[in-house]
Length: 205
Image 1 (cartoon, one colour):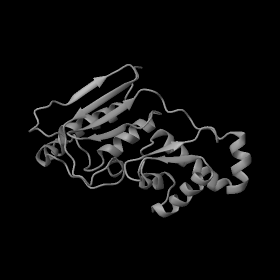
Image 2 (cartoon, rainbow, N blue to C red):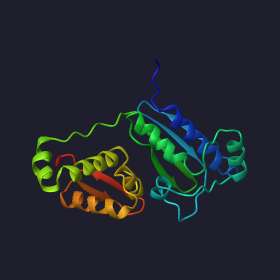
Image 3 (cartoon, rainbow, N blue to C red):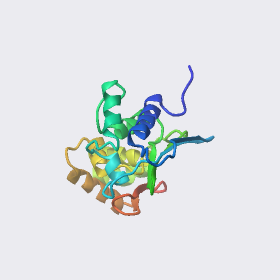
């Protein structure tokens, strides 16, 4: 059976998003670039200043740049639910064992990049078990391993999405786990709280 380097559902959602959110007054076409190790999609969609990568990756309301185009796709059965395109795109990649797509906002357009490299599994080593298992307890350690796995697969993941990974209804609980991981030297935040990324420190594991 042929294996796609990018899961078809994720690629489909990315193209649909580009068509629905494109700024058709710009005259610039949607661009799809394929390389040996990645696939990149760019469109000339514009976002309001309050929209950030973190907000797009988290739970958000649907605000299509072209509501009539979006409605046509919805009525045609191409869009199953409003406001979940990016969430479905990310989940399709994670389910396939791939890294989550990277979103980048820039003046005049939006990039979506799919890496062809599988997400390397995060395995609890002997050092981790001895040092943190006894200190944190098995339940907390398992939760924090799941958070590390999620941050490694998707460095742009929001605290809202991390709370979902941990099975928590709010972000207050996951913040305590993130604080413990920071204090242990397992993670660091690169860039601002909004728009930054997570970095998992490999040596500590």
